[in-house]
Image 1 (tube, rainbow, N blue to C red):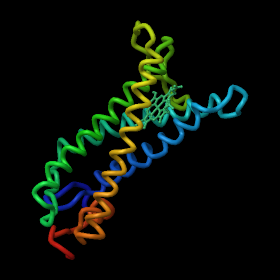
Image 2 (cartoon, rainbow, N blue to C red; image 1 turned 180 degrees about the horizontal axis):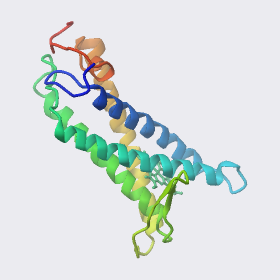
Image 3 (cartoon, protein in one colour; image 1 turned 45 degrees about the horizontal axis):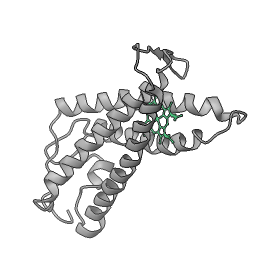
Length: 190
Ligand code: HEM
């Protein structure tokens, strides 16, 4: 089983990092929306944000790992059936998604540390607050965090729709090679 990427396929490490970040992001969005609507007496009033912050810091670590892994590995070429206009669009979408997720982490950290308190990650360790912050930091960072999460939902839908279109309409290996490491020849219906 390939751990490393090749010019036509993803290795196991890249696949696991992709799905771990995807799973966490898709969990964090509904968790964030749900927990902000809880009233003070709800049993999850504190646990919800604690879980959200811990998972958010985990995303930050995985994202850094993913970008480093990407930097030291070959990136597989687009499948041979990808249209010329799809290639730059896919690349742009992927970089925008990395940027939005990074900014979500930074704004989430700024909301959480606006009062000078560190972020506790499941009680395992703390990410210290850097300060002093600025006036209204919690509210401003909260607005940015919310808008970025909504924009990210749009990108996730676009990204998933493109993957499904490659699988169902084009019948190529775009989705399969992000699910199972192996040999792909990048041609139609291989
Ligand atoms: C990919 C990563 C993340 C995603 C997708 C995400 C998503 C969300 C969403 C959808 C909300 C609800 C926004 C609202 O209704 O106002 C939220 C709220 C929140 N998030 Fe995140 N988040 C992420 C990372 C983080 C991180 C790393 C932290 C802190 C270290 C964090 C801290 C918070 C806090 C404190 C709130 C509550 C804001 C408020 O009460 O207005 N988030 N997040």
